[in-house]
Image (cartoon, rainbow, N blue to C red; front, top):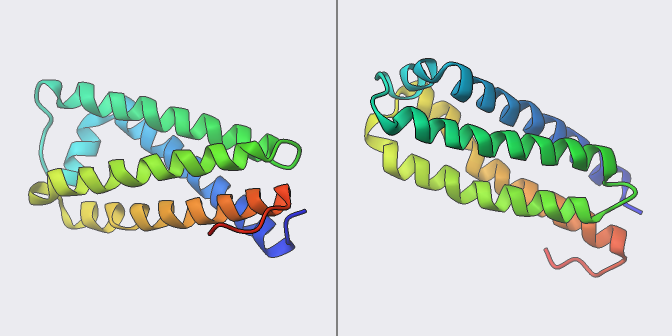
Amino acid sequence: MVERRLRILILVYLWGALIEDTLLFVIAWVAPDLWFRVFHHAFPIGFEVAFLRRSAGQWAAFALAQAITLWRWKKQPVWLAVEAGIRFSDLFTDVSYIIVTAHSLTTVGWFLLLPPPLLNLVGVVIMLRAYNQMQGAKPAI
């Protein structure tokens, strides 16, 4: 069984991540012009919208996996490990996006894009600790 504090952290994290990834998907898919204005103070050209919508598809997949994890993790703890993998992969996409676009980020872009890599790392730790507790394993993290 997972300790109460960790259970609360899981729920807060998963709901927050679900809301964030859903909003990112909607903005990127429905209003790519808004995305580029807010984050880069620019207008998209050519393939930029296609690549942004590709990212939106990834955020939709993240949101779906988080919804499944919220629904199933107590009965199927493996979903916590799946969520840790998702957050781990997103950690690297966040960092690479910041590195590649640093020259064009707005102040709002910096404000909104700097926390996610750290929050993804925190999510990996939370999910793996809970998974280990539920499996009765000694924590690796």
